[in-house]
Length: 325
Image (cartoon, rainbow, N blue to C red; front, side):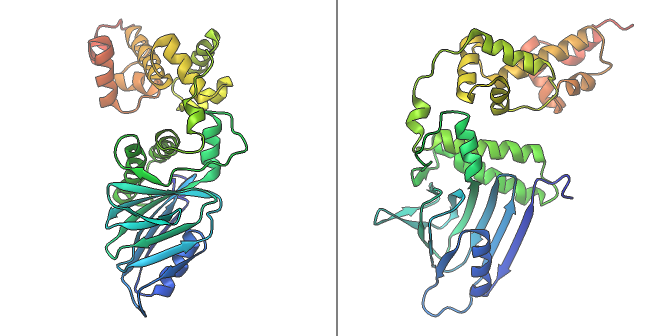
């Protein structure tokens, strides 16, 4: 199972014992204290957790008003997305409500103090700090300043991509189970989550990300295209392509926008469609599926729609008109 599943570890706990719940929560998150009302000795709590490649997804439902206090987070940042109920977050000496229209973001190195409503259902994305810094370092030059996020995120506008990625990853896990998740899908969702948090939410490097970049070398796009055309079937992200040609992801995107008027990923899709059409026209492929798979396009319905949009005919029509030797 481990060879095909992107999940490193899955935990699913339901308990009425506050001690059991507390131990599990401490194991999954940072060391913290949990305060329950009065002399409560029983609760109806559930905790689910899945460890992915560079992040973890957790869901909490305690059924009781609860206060959580922890020391500064070490090695990760978190996004807390209420699905029902609300939490209060202490920030700069004041309590701020976070309901289902918002999310709370806790940065590496920041202490956490929260109060949960009894009806709170909370989804948490825990993102490795190394993953965040790796991605940010591909966009801007990192200085000595730590990466610190604004503590509150609206679930509309740019912030919606962050909370949306968290909930999409949670939905995929709940819908498919531990063994059914496609590793490529999880990788894309993790990438969306990390990129969305860095690009769609304010933090200590946001100004650097917004600063104008120098005009890229005219040869940059040509080198990137050469790299792509060497193996069009290989999956590759914009970050990986930028690393391959030795520039930041932001510089690469700007170079493509200036040179061809589109993003690296969209241009890659066009290259793949052009190569597939050439194979159908010259008869080097026996089927539409073979032509699509040869360039890394494995969803045939999507391939057919994109093909018709680009060339004005279906791939089957192109194949029927090709020479047969």
